[in-house]
Every structure is written in C-alpha cells, then in structure tokens.
Length: 310
Image 1 (cartoon, one colour):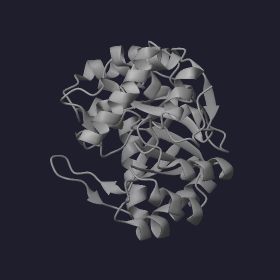
Image 2 (cartoon, rainbow, N blue to C red):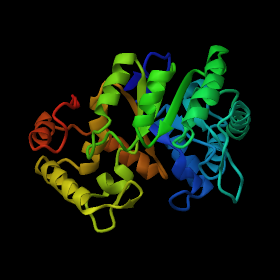
Image 3 (cartoon, rainbow, N blue to C red):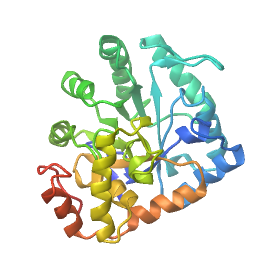
C-alpha cells in the first residue's frame, strides 16, 4: 500500500487507515471475533494506521484492539487515540479537558490497548470547550510530545473552523477532519491549504458523509448522521450519474477524492468486517480516469480550486 508522512512528523502511514469506532458496536453489533479478524485483515493488507478513542463504546474499541494487536509487533502499526472525555460504562461521557483528564485518559487507553505508548493523540470534539482545550489540554500534550511520550499532537472534529483556530494558536502536527472535505462538500479547502503550507497533516475521516457517498442516493441515505436532505440527494445523484458514465462506483470516487489534496496524509475509514476492508481496498486501488474529475469540476459539482487526484 502507498504510504505518506504525516505533515512534518516522522510518522509514515498507509494512505488508508482503520477507524475503530465500528468495532465498538456503535452502528451495529459486531462480535468480538469479527472485530479481531477485521483488524488483522487490515494489517495483513498493509494498513498501518489505526484510530480509536475511549468514547467508542466506553472503552470497548480500545479493549478489542488490545486483543487484536496482542501478537503484533508494536512497530508494525501507528495508533492514534483521543482525550478530553471521561468514560463511564452505561452512562454518557463527561468533559475532561484538563491536565488531569488528559493523563487519566491516556493511562486508561494504554491499559486497554495493552501498549506502552500511542503515537498520535487527538483532542476529541472540543466544540464547546475551546478555551480549556487550548489552555489546558494542548500544553499537556505539548509537554508529553517534548518528553517523547507521544509523537504527534492533534485535534479531531467534525468542523474545520475551530481546527483553524487551533492551527494558528499552537504547534499542532496534524488534525483529524471528519466529513468537511469530501466529494460532496469542500468548504474546508482554505483550511487544508493553510495546513499544507504549515506542514500540518490531515487525517481525513467521514469521507462518505455518514453514508450517502457509499450507498448512493437511496431513500434511506444518511448525511451528517441524519436523513439526507433533498439538495444533498440531488447533488449526489448528479455526481453518481457522471461516475456511472465512466463505470466508476460512487464510493471509489468518494474514497479517492480527498487524497488529491497535498495536506491529506491518510483516510480514516470505519471497518466492521474483513469484507469491508477488502471492498475499500478495491475502491482505493481502482483506476479513475482524469476526465471524470475534470467533468465533475466543469459541472460545478466540486470546487474549481480543488486539487484533483492524480
């Protein structure tokens, strides 16, 4: 698999990463044996980046990764987890955007993952906690990075506006951006341009916009975790029509599009089964004619300024 270096860090990862949220039964029931098989199938296929969080199933995602990775050499993969929330089995997570919250959270993650260190730490969804995130969480992560305890400081969100504030307020190595730079929407383009200029890598998540770019414009299609509105359905239909004319699955175009931007280091895709791993790998490896991208741009379906995949 093709690999890229994340920004200006020393972390070189596969361009397809494993998002471990589905392994925690967040979307449908996934048996433990299936979760373990999924992780090992991804690793065997060349996936080297794994992204998880304590909030995924109140620690279940990390616990299952700990089982799956127990016999895998630690240097064979790069792992990212998240801080900012205390987890309570059977209850909603509570904000923990403090130094103690960071240290407590990381200690729990290391125990569940059964590893001595994690590579990337994201500040997890600090939408209503910017001040504490930048004044308490970020300095703690900065200190841990300087001590060599972690290798990269990041923040992960479903919006780019606050990530842009982080970009200009601290020395971040990368960001996880979910759903805001996709085949359907490119509102984060200027932010990604600034990240590329600053040498900050982007881990692109949510590239299917919660499902519609994977399923197509079916009646039950989801967009941003809700039923897709009419204008999104219509735009998806237009994109899908052009893809079909080139005999390219919509999901393949959606998967490959974000990689056209130089700031994007890797895609973080949620896998729930070995079959899902194989399907996404096939879509990633599919050759897409340059003419398809040009037609989408000429039709006004993707922003004219967007860099196109090679």
